[in-house]
Length: 206
Image 1 (cartoon, rainbow, N blue to C red):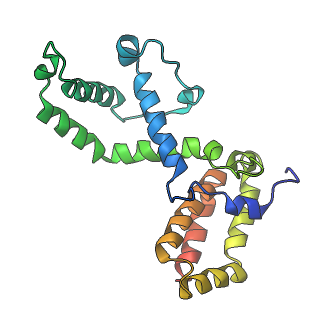
Image 2 (image 1 turned 180 degrees about the horizontal axis):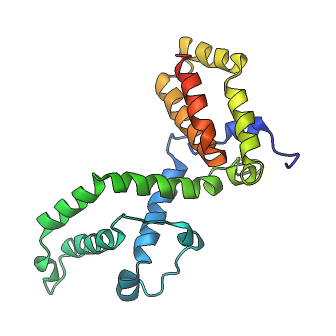
């Protein structure tokens, strides 16, 4: 366990930027586009010079229809081009929109989104001053750090500071819920078994 790593640093790691945006969500969108560009048929015809990112080998689509999504997104793009040869007219935009809606409303879409998010999270989330990443806490000692983080957020002093912040208007419940979701993602990546006990404990503190 590296001496420069502390539970305080681990707890402070967040995907949220000063403007409130989620850096991992943004990176996940870009990564999904890379996944689509790397699909064999799409890559060969439309993006032959595109270099698939190294992390692509970690992506598990399972039952997600990535081929169908890739083809449909290309069809959608062509339908909006208004090219001089009128190729866009052969695309039935209503069918394209229905197919995309079906994908975006599916459970498979949510599962893929979480998979991409947690794949990128360990390297995207880092402390800017030291460049320490969540990845640095993972590995053989991951469960140890999960225990330390769980103890940290279950400490009465920390809970008291959170409650005082909410009561005094310095910390909103929306921000609390946002930050707790980020906490649970960290715990999930460090040791999945640590999530439920911490969730139940914090739920009982409300």
